[in-house]
Each structure stands twice: as C-alpha cells, then as structure tokens.
Image 1 (cartoon, rainbow, N blue to C red):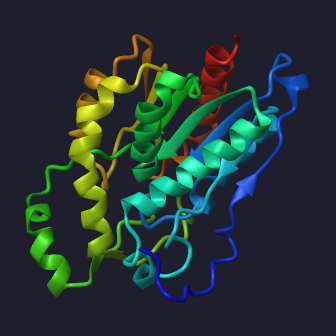
Image 2: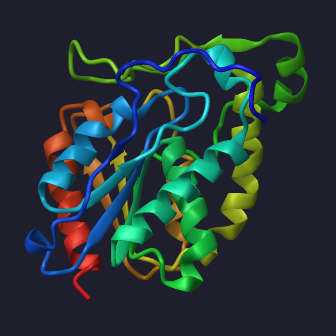
Length: 264
C-alpha cells in the first residue's frame, strides 16, 4: 500500500548504483545487491557497499519504500512493498552483470533470503551474505501486535545499536506497528521456504546484538539447503555492524566470499 503523498527523503537516503569493472574481477561483471534494515535507510549500508564497489563490483543499494522519510510514512507500507523494491534492484543488476550476490542487514537479510529462495532455480543468485538477519524473535509482546497496531501507532525505535562512539544510522526514533506486524507475518513463510536456498551463504553475527536475538541464527543456518555455509563472528560490533568497529573485517570477508562464489 502506498500513501497518497510521501514526505521528503532524507539527503543521505538516496539509493546507490555503480557499474561493474571486470578488469578488477577476473573478467566477469559481478554485482552485489546490498539491502538495509527495518526503520533504517541506505546510509546504514553504504560504507559496506562502497568498499565493494571500489573492488570492481557493481552495487545496488535500494531505498526500501517508507524508509528515509518518516516513521509515519513507513506505517503505510508492507513487506510486499519492500520485497518488490528488492526484486527490482536485483533485475537492474542482472541487466549489467553476469552474476549477482545478495547481501542484507537485519530485515534486509530476511529480504535477500526471500529473494534467494524465490529465484534460486533460475541461477540468478551466486551467493547470499546476511548480517544479523531477523526471521524470528523471542519477544512475547509480538503476539499482541494484531491488536496493538490498531491502538498504538508505534513503539520506541530500534536504531543506532552501534558500539562505535559517535556513529548514527539515521534511522527512525519510532517503530511503526503496522509495518512491524507485516514484517513479522512474513517470517514463518520465509522460514518454511529456507530449504529452497541452495546458494553459498555467509552468515555474519555480532557478539552483542540488542535488536535481533539469537533465535534467527539456528533457523537459518540449519534450514538452508546450501552445503556452503560460513559463520563469521563480529566481536566488536552491535546490531548495525555495517557501521561499527568490525566493518573492515566484514568488508574483507564479504569481498573474499563474493570473489570465491563468482569465480566461475
């Protein structure tokens, strides 16, 4: 669902798109789709994506609908809207690349897993990188969301869970409940479809995460059908690891993973 009129977009929330440089990637045109998380915006993953672009990979960082504006605006959008934008970004990469890897933070990780499950059979996904992805939660209050979303418009925000001092992801101060409920309703279907993911997976998990609890990791790593699953620990980061102390480690491991799974 799209609101009648959307508010202005934050200046740091513009999407990012670059072209491949095959001279740096073994002659192949390699693309990486990088997706931000719920109530975040492209600024939260751009440093990660820009480092990959400097290594010759084409990148697409879409702005998910309702993000980078206001939390009230986000409440007018749903999982289907965000997923449609991820699909569109994937198609744009396929137009200029020979092979594509998917990457995402938090809800962005769930969205790219959904995409990998849906298009895997067509060979359009060479690998998947997820950072603190969310497909489940131990919070008991989520069972009340079907009722609460009609009574309370939002909960306190979940942004800026970053260990590195002075860093912000420019996310929302509130989490809109209708949008939250839509995201969480998509989780059981995604978890059931995880066996459809056969591409190699790099699963990055922060040592401390105040947003996504530990319940998602075993669900993902045990249910995907890929025989190539690597777990990367990020010891000096909180939830938004793409802006935190372990960003250099994440970049190097992601670049190595992308090079390996796209070598042909």
